[in-house]
Length: 370
Image 1 (cartoon, one colour):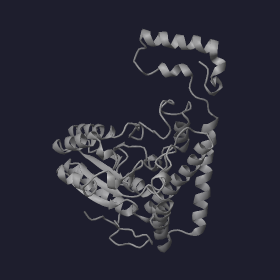
Image 2: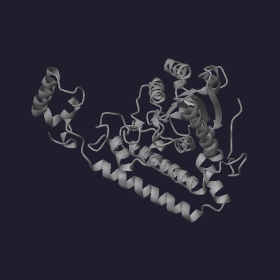
Image 3: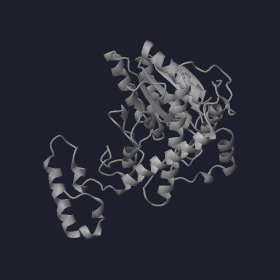
Image 4: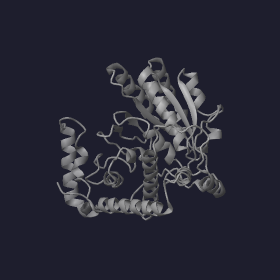
């Protein structure tokens, strides 16, 4: 299956640039990509300093996020995996709330009950991320089916990696969406590795895109490091979903430059030279930068200002979140049931008594008091 590309590595155009993608919009996307890249660098370092417990970067996958997020509407729902922070940045989620989630403090929308980077935001129609692989796919098909029934014109964007496509839930979700004509975009980030397993050991066929054709849905493979190609493919996919109530599969070919997570050392299964080659020759951020320069839409001075401003904003949000306390320990019993049953009330009282006696063994100063 061929790969659709618009923007070359040197910033030149090999296809037609959609006229709706204005210069202002391209600059907006680029600014967001730089912000995500800056946040990832700072948060990765903060983990190495022991200041947060976990993190996952999006190095090398920025174009796939912003190109796709920019082509759907704010009313569309997003089911993400765990490398879609850029979608939230594009949807204007405050950096402070993203930092609060990574710290699990009292301002975290998830009340500190998720691992870092497992974001969620009801107001932005971004469903909370789950660590369990591929659970979001059948959920996305189900919500898309409800959108079909209510005739709202909304669609669902569902992100996943090529490794997740090996789970049974992927088959169930795509078959469900196809047979019931659900307006959902299945967006596969084929970044070359499922943690330490290379794509060559993940499947025997030609990638993921052909599976869409097998399910009877429209499918396209795009250069995932090409902001313009991803945007155009997603824009057309959304049109198919909204106007025909049909699912679409997009396979974005990209490369995971960073480790799978802060718990991973990718040098154990791939060479440093391989990573550096992708960083040097096919950086999605560098591609857009070259395009902007070539078309007199950017300058080195504006680049320095952007980098400095992005770093200042991330550090400000980071410092704010780091100083906040977590919710009271007893809040762990809240929100499980509409009315707290007797067994949870008993457990909460047992915890209170335990902390009264052994509280000096716990970092209670990090939590607000009841």
